[in-house]
Amino acid sequence: MRLRIPPALKHRRFFYVWLGQLISVAGTQMQIWALFWHIRTLTSQPIALGGIGMARIFPVIIFSLIGGAVADSYNRRTVMFITQTTVALLALTLGLLTQFGLVSLWVIYGITALQAVAIAFDGPSRQALIPNLVPAKDLPNAFSLTSMAFQTGAVIGPALSGIVIAAAGQQAVYYINAISFVAVLIALVLIGDVPQKVSAQAKGVSLGAIREGVHFIVTHPIILSTMLLDFVATFFASANTLMPIVARDVLKVGVVQYGWLSAAQSVGAVLAALVISQVRELRKQGPLFLGAVVVFGLATVLFGATSSLVVAWAALAVTGAADGVSTIIRNTIRQLATPDHIRGRMTSINQIFFQGGPQLGEIEAGAAAQFFGAPFAIISGGIACVLGLFLIVRKWPQLISYNGDETALAGATAD
Image 1 (cartoon, one colour):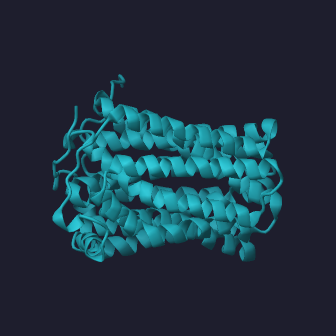
Image 2 (cartoon, one colour):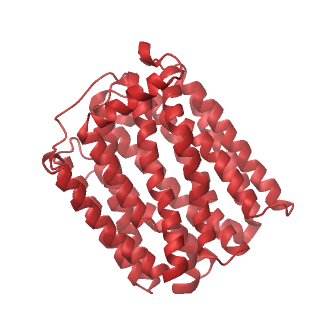
Image 3 (cartoon, helix red, strand yellow):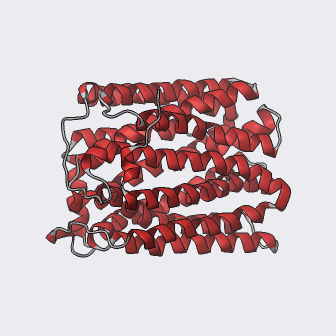
């Protein structure tokens, strides 16, 4: 297949944001995986790794709905300026505290929670901004490229985290992450003002505006079902926080191999996103989405059952590819089925499901590993993921026949 320039990249403002995210995500992923390793060096208790999930999810639950109303009421570009600067300063603070020996588990949890607050406001504005940068026909392509940027950064970040820790110390990772956010800030300057639609009900943050967003979700089954399926899959089959334990205690490898293992999922996701970016029109999106979730669960079972580094890496790569496909499809479904004036609130509710699943899943996985061991926690989670899919499809069978052209709301602009 001959590679072509994806149509979304031909839109200048989207290209700037896409490139900034690619750089920033690499730094963020370096920090995420370095935090897991950092915690494992401070304590050998698996449940302590689950604490990271708790520190992330509560701010998301508390502030996401407010963040969605902010994204629909105020300039999304300005909101991103504030949130990106905040997370950069927090990463810098974590680096300084680590360098001077002032870090502890509670310091890590506290800074992680503050970063999660900023992300609760950043996510709705960032995702709702994308449909304003490309026309509706290029939106699936834009989301495949966004996924590719995220996953490419997630390949580079974990792969480098182990090397950076070994060569320059834990704090170096946090400093690099702080610097990486400058790329997004530059992109936001270059794109200039981005017009957005604001409804009368969304002028300001209010309970009425939040209720409007919740009502929209519950009255659109195709959106609600994809959110619930996303939550169930990532809640049960999230094994990221157990990676240091699997690396050290099951596979018997060191920090560099841990970095490679941590990057495996993103390698698979990048390849999947690259393939989808070359597809002009994505059809039979429902069956493809459901099939991807099944593959995700089964590959998770394989990862939990093996003691081979090669097999574990391959299984994780498959989970990444499957998750990448499902992410692109569900994001496209939601954004095309949502009017611009309510996209921030829709995204904020989705953010609770999207981040709540894996973060609460980290707590569940840590607790299960504490009592039954890491392999059991991972294998049982993969099985529960597949079972959960069948229950959701039984409730919303329209997912099986969803093609992708049923709803296509325009409202996007491009230059």
